[in-house]
Length: 248
Image (cartoon, rainbow, N blue to C red; front, side, top):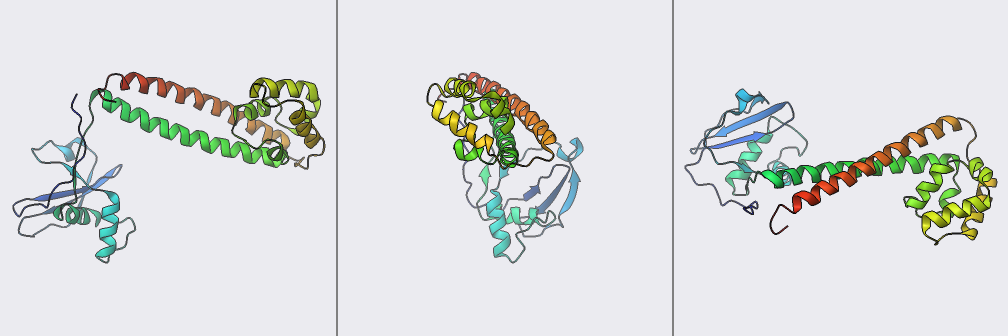
């Protein structure tokens, strides 16, 4: 399998017609500049087959940061203005700062999509974990003082079984100790269980609207577990495709 990497192109020669496109989800903006400097006003076209008939041209790409910086240098606003972006992209290409375009195929294409899906899933899981910590703080603010690593598996297992201070008190110290020993593989035990139990007895968490909060906590746990399973499946697929790519 060929190992392709993006490469920086040299300065565009004087006989090249530059066609720049700022690609959007639904609408794209195009721009043409002739070798003699003549150009046309940027135009819009939709993401349909008619707008992308295959022609024999050299495809390149530009770094969005280069586009933004050049817009600032030329006096334009760095804010998103689709109609003007193709002209700036053409300027970047003309200055020789374009990059070759590498379109992955086969296992490499699958691996890229799997990596992107994994990044989105991890971001989603992190967001849900942060929401979960916020809700726990609302009903049991003392918990974060007794358990420092709020995203650890033993904390999540404990909260899943005893999400509120009253459920911890009902569980009792000894069963609580057993849960901590099992989930932490013996690192936590009687002393930590007593700290959590005593904090639960004196908790200053809110008392109104607790049922709704507990319902949302349960919902978040289910989603986090599903996201964990999805991430694990993505990583298995990534390992499979990595084995098909030489030198990976």
